[in-house]
Image 1 (tube, helix red, strand yellow):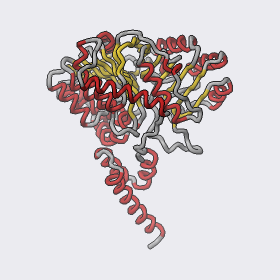
Image 2 (cartoon, one colour):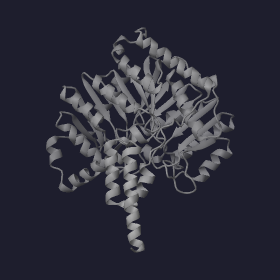
Image 3 (cartoon, one colour):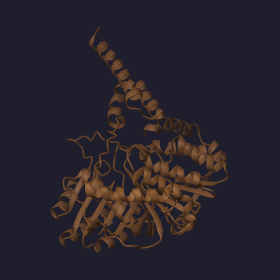
Image 4 (cartoon, helix red, strand yellow):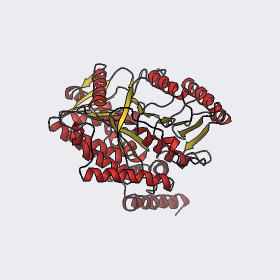
Length: 479
């Protein structure tokens, strides 16, 4: 046998060994396992390298740790709320929310998501509106600014933020900026250096080793800003000119972000500290001045996080629980709609039960394969009686669910495998008719700027589109 023959035998044996590892050792989801086995079968050499970059699982050991004092504080509060709910002693400020106590209990057990009921929330759906509000709050900071984004760019918007961050650091405010190394890979080193030289503490989540970053998956997709422990921002906007609608490719950028005051900011702060301490050598120690909140309103909030290091898919489980609790309607906005079977079944069951299920998706892709898989999965809901709308006024990037005008969720998690299993995400689960009805009203306004995908129109799609959908759907478990 020649060298090529030995090489071919080695590749076949290696592929078989890797396939056995995927099936028996890593205990992946069956659909994901089949998708990777197909990749290894049809592209054996390149497939191996693709698996190393995209498919290798992260350790299930929790990568986020916190000091003993703060851990005890969080656990004590969680256990107290759990006992209160179990013994039916917990008092909801709004009686109509008692029917959702099992959702509150689920998030407490799943994710230590403490439930607070004294929050005020402003909904921000326009990029200029969101960043103007954020900059105004940052300019008022007197103690600290904690900022975390998946994507940060050193463009016009990035420079606006840098100017404020540098100014506040020069005033003696403690400023920390955490960015994801893959999402912000275009961020200029000179930009980071300028921030650091001004006294801003800057760190990257899962940075590249040498030149190439092997952790293309397992990215920190969270977007959080906490100012003086009093004001928190959470939602879908990243830092870049496209989020202000200044990129022709996308046009107007339609997103949803929340400005929160009240005790929920404490839980947002906890999340930032955990993420920062994982990424930085400059460890943040537990201190009361990071938790300087005061009652601000009457909205109930749980800050729920999820990630590939967790045992449960916390945010997805929360979505399913919300959908199955629906009596009247479920409104969903998402740029990527690639649900797994459990979430797809929940939506079908709701629609078949007479619940008004409406899903809104973008009219253009920012990731082609994901877009075609989104179209395919959306089309699947039509025969169950759900309605699908395609947003036409630019690019839809909002990650929002509203149920019955009483509960809602806004955050960073898309409806796809990447958000549920691969990325680190954070969502605010909202309890209260006022805030939920406002989100529902915004959904109705967006319908006026959308076209409806009917079964008749969906069946008329071309052979080319059908092929793209089929291929994308086949690959969707690993997209």
